[in-house]
Length: 426
Image 1 (cartoon, helix red, strand yellow):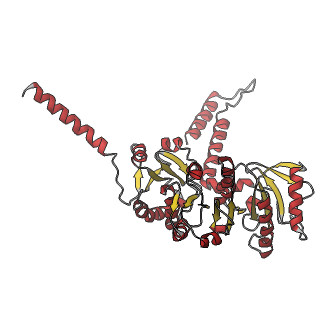
Image 2 (tube, rainbow, N blue to C red):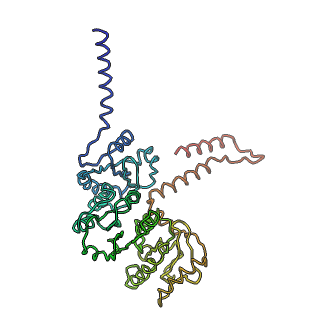
Image 3 (cartoon, rainbow, N blue to C red):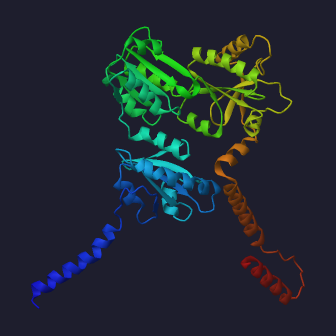
């Protein structure tokens, strides 16, 4: 065999070794959930424009319940014009990946858009998940050509996100902001429309930007000026409804909003008296857009309410101003809202807060209940176990001092030390 033949054979053998390792990281859109590990995670993320990833743990009950929903959603998402691939990885086992993406609870859901991760806080049922993720692959601004196109767009968008419709407005006016806030809302531009559409959305004139919150039956209209500063302020304020019912899921919507939260704690948010009070809150919210207005029922979420010094004996409703973190403000003279002329009392509450007539307080220990609900009891048990182990090591590792004049048999001391060593090994 000639030297050239030998070299050719060696190169061929080398390629046979290399190619399988490359092809081992090739993926296809087949409507199934990809099971990833540390060896192929980065390759999978870079192989698709949109990848929805569940970081799970085998022992996690929520993860087990989510799994069949992902299996149902995967073939529907793969059928998009721009497909979304669903993948999962055991973040409890593959700690390097978990550490890289700061995974602290299970399941944690992220959508990778062109390799860039974004936290996912949306619905988890398969049909709602599909509708939610459709927004990520939709155009930044959808151009609507007719009245029927507007109707179809609003129906397809669903109720989870706010919807912005530019009427008689140039697409370029909102394009940059639409790209910036695409994760949080639908954006569209009505290119052609009739008087019927004008009446449907209560438009007095055009151009205008209509903001809809279908889930809360709310609508707001912006008539300008159509400059980035004013447009962005309007969009930011309309990302949340005028009044937001607080739940564990809705709390996550507040993370990126810098406004303080006017929080009302009620006995039962579903009671008819509470619903009447919420109408007053909406009126106040409409006139005070520099705040977020939210409410929670003591009956619906007692642990959360107790963090604001609320008990079963507290006169309710009670209003506070919360920074969204660990501090809240009690307004002097407006600790609770009485049953008569509540609208005026809400106005007085806001006036006193703006005047600085407040007492700053820290959230109470019951807020631990909220932390536990987010992290899961298993994480709490692990933390307690680790503290106990550290304490045990510190205690057992101490040498027992020998007093001056101690005449005990050295063999007894040696036996005791041997028993202590055995205990530590156990």
